[in-house]
Image 1 (cartoon, rainbow, N blue to C red):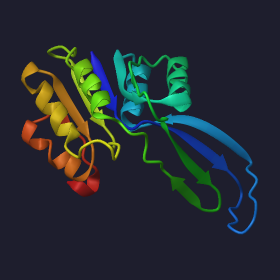
Image 2: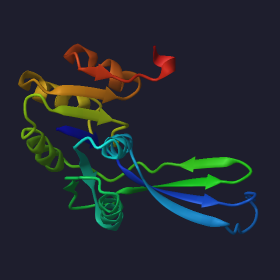
Image 3: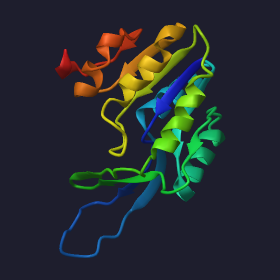
Image 4: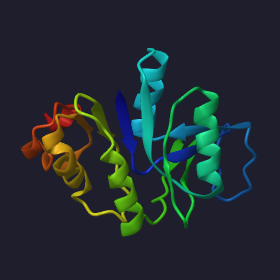
Length: 186
């Protein structure tokens, strides 16, 4: 089984218009909503390829419910932890004569939320794949990927890490099964 982890998923709200004027009211030509997050994107592709997988991570509030509904409508298996407080983030993407991306920081993930999530990872079996992908919320420690790899390290779980910068470099000591650095990091 393959498990993907997206610690900071999002709804991407895309607004399209011909030109963006900063000194006036702008009317859009259309809007679309997509689910987002690197781990979720991996789950989408795996599902399209017919490879069984489950998306894991954190969701919160009405935006989390909407994201999960959209995933289930696309037959994406998911088992998210729901946060007691806060909403899954919304990223605003403006597509006009110039493009603007406004990415939210995401909800607060408490120590209790994280402990519950880590206990879920204890159910992953030997030989399974665990894919850690994307950024981490600013309320989690910078070494969270390291903590996860250390926790599953002695159980013969194939860990894959798709991250950037120190987040990626710091997990190398755990010898993940596969890493996906960006071209400029090679």
